[in-house]
Length: 381
Image (cartoon, rainbow, N blue to C red; front, side, top):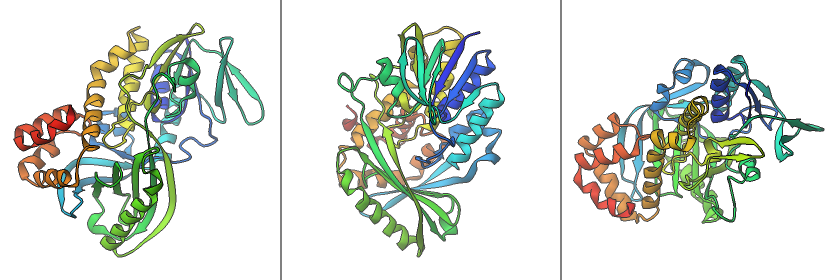
């Protein structure tokens, strides 16, 4: 029997572990924290495409907090376009991660908590436990250990000097408010920081946050978040901060290597560790789960993981990065102009029928519906 160790029990790690176990592999899932899903470092927003994943669709009652039907995209002048959504999902990330790890465990995965991966030594993996070092062996090692992946660095897949990663830093405050009118509407501010958001969990609680490139204007992030909270106060008439969360968001890197042979083992990266994140919004859950499916398929069928990703995922992540680079060049006037275009009913129909997880298809259909979007195409290249 082939032994597999998955390092990191986030969504991509637990999902990979579960399906490899169901394919007959002996799988161990190692998580550094005592509680899987803690600390929370995510907005918990999933696109409607998440419902194409049976495990999510069939178990929504275990972690779903809200369904969103509308987004309001704001311009710097205060104008906004109200765009219909197919039904985005707001999940409780603690409950979501916990469910996926339990599901992996019920499929035969051995789950180890308080196991922090340290290094490879003579073909073994060294983990720091609560009070001692644990040594584990495996034929296949999968790094699902987040943006700063130690598996990636120790195996040579991630090199700070040769191919440095780029990060955003996100700050989010969970606030209490009263607003049934906006209970199912996400507010998005693409010009504030790299992007900012107000995501309602229900009619009484919202997640309000801002993301910025690490090292660029990062000290002004709290000012931007406070201005967003002030706008939120003006909109609802009341808010109270419940808690604050923060975390790194990897920017997709098309040059990132995701597989190697190391000390006789096969090593793979998946999820945030592989920068499989939409550069436009920082969303990594759905891309990470899709990448996990590619990884499981490549291992089971003895196919090249990178090639499988190119078939199913890389193209959309590439165009998402191009859009992010374009947005970084926008002036305030550009944002105002594009929001004005988005107010048209023919454009809104495109947004309603096409997933944002397919940005290439979305952009082409937007241009077909409104050729003036080509004006912004100059920023893509």
